[in-house]
Length: 350
Image (tube, rainbow, N blue to C red; front, side, top):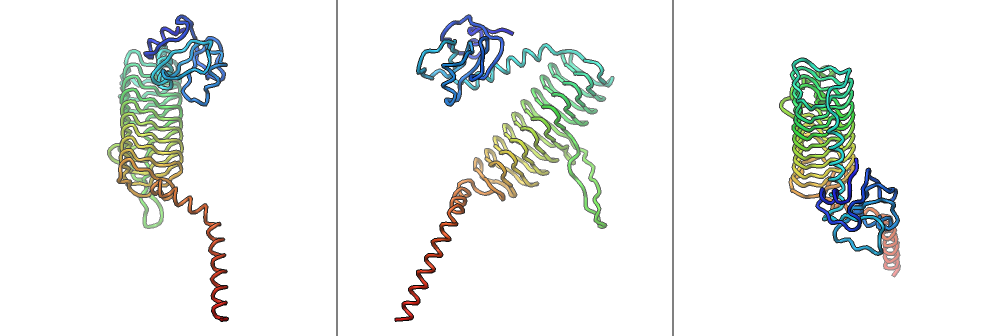
């Protein structure tokens, strides 16, 4: 695919500096881009590359002041990072639109209902009474269980597994290896020390514009639904337990785990390897630092916590500063004790 600077500027509402008809056919990082590629500059740390890159077109912020002339064409926009992401999305959409039809071998149950422009990759399985909306792409080796509903313009990357009765709304993206709707970890302890499995008869509901990374697992509810609300973004390798609710536009980084029945509010930020116990609530806008262990409800909206057990972020930083000074404090106390002993000895001797 080929785009001129004029076409790019039109797509991102930008202003051109340089040759408007110069064309690009691919994308490149600013430090590596070659002629015929489009790049961008959003981080000032990469500024020097703007003057040495071989790229044909660069997207930069409208207020950015050049230190010296450049040879490539510039497209100035309000936010270079957002504009570049917008172009990448458009490019991906155009590539995706070319994928339609059913590849063989695949199994599609007779009662399944697929929109005309759905793509199903080879070795995929689509069960009874499944509904798949317009423009959705199911990549090879995916599994969609009975009674699953998938909305329009979703993308299921290779090897995604959606268990029975789960619901995906529109524009949901799920990356390779993720499992949605596996049984929750429910086992009742018995008098003899064994554990009896508690049937997990609920489902998972994933709302609009949710994106879920590779090899993440989202367990179905025991009763009711595990819910991922609109706009939430989940990284790779995350465990979401049964009956969890994740609020709108909440972001969770890799290797985090959320235990059963915990309710996470809207616009929450959770760092990598954080762990949340079950049956607690996380207030809207909370920030949970990486590797934190949250063991109780966070009631104050837009507060920050860190550590294990997690505590107020600012107080934790002060505690860490004190901890670093403990060796010096110990030394000073030792010296003070020597002085006190000396003064006591002198007083007794007098």
